[in-house]
Image 1: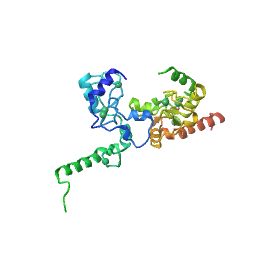
Image 2: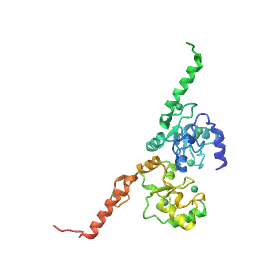
Image 3: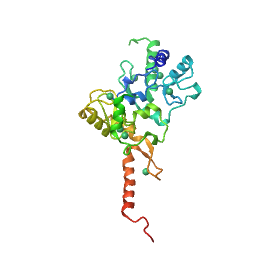
Image 4: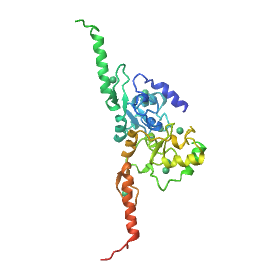
Length: 140
Length: 140
Ligand SMILES: [Zn+2]
Ligand SMILES: [Zn+2]
Ligand SMILES: [Zn+2]
Ligand SMILES: [Zn+2]
Ligand SMILES: [Zn+2]
Ligand SMILES: [Zn+2]
Ligand SMILES: [Zn+2]
Ligand SMILES: [Zn+2]
């Protein structure tokens, strides 16, 4: 791993927002897990974009890297500005979205497809909001 | 790339039997192509098996390597004998089999799923056999 990639990893700071591949329910081969993970943060790809050198990143990760480290791919140093970032082929996105993971929310044991995760997580947020604004014990 | 991996590549000698990822119809990200390719021969995985260290190989490739180079994974040198080789998870096999490639046979322009390729290629063999055993010009 190059020094610039290690630096890039410190810049992105996404641990609280992204999902780890350890949540995957199935025991996939190493290289397959790498192929659905961000090359900077190593989380499961979130809103993936592809560089001209065909490396994949979460959109927020590569944009932060470019802003701080310059217009280069953090993996292979090929020139890469924000305008050169493209969406990966739909067929790859389908593979990514179909991965099944275990929801990391406390007390939620559900298995959710990655493509449905943000909708699913929305429920958890609403539940927390409700609890925050209404008395915990409504009496009776 | 390690010396033992370069040696392994010379041993397998599978160019005539395996399919190159260049036949893939869609323009996939680099790491995804690696994840569906044999870590020794770099062709599209043919009858894939998974080592205990979760690397993937064509069955014939890893068996040849083990026979010649010893009971180790050719990528990471983790101990690996023929009995430790397992089938990758079905969900990965489905991804692999669903990849669409352009049939490499002369004059065949068909796009075929990898999972259906061996059936498809059987037709080409039968056609060649027919031509071999019957006169090219049947007259009229
Ligand atoms: Zn991340
Ligand atoms: Zn990322
Ligand atoms: Zn790159
Ligand atoms: Zn949940
Ligand atoms: Zn091969
Ligand atoms: Zn192989
Ligand atoms: Zn290995
Ligand atoms: Zn054909």
